[in-house]
Picture 1 (cartoon, rainbow, N blue to C red):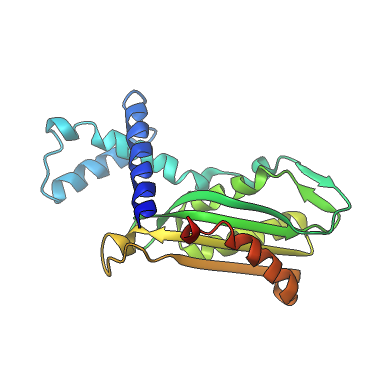
Picture 2 (picture 1 turned 90 degrees about the horizontal axis):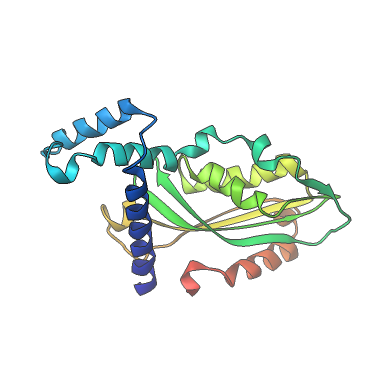
Length: 217
């Protein structure tokens, strides 16, 4: 629980730093600024008071960053970083931190993604896997869909023998409202190819993931 609260404090600190940077940059979406200004009015606030005068700008800039995945291109991310290699064991990139927005309440969910694949003559540059995670995380999402999109995209790009993705996340829509359960961790997985059909291969990957679980921190 203490570690969860520490992680939330880190998010708030990052948001504060982002807001300070945004204060000196124009927004690319003045219409969104107007919507935020109207939202402040509808909840009973005064957008003209000192502390809120630049809030519409900050929120517009934040939303541009948080939903940047809609404008990301898979071809640009991969950028031909696929290489022929005779390697037939699990390649895994674990503990990939991400932040996303729940499409039901527009509140954040955040956690880690563990991604693995078994090459079929080709490998991808390791940095491309976290970039693929970010491309889908920076959209309005469901954790279930996010997990499947990551796996299916790696399958599409590499055509490997198998792909495995396990995502663990805390959802602020469960922590701040509704059931208000602050320590509930949601885990989703998507197994394709050898990971789906071979229990030994699947268990090997899941054992590796267990060493990087949010619950183990």
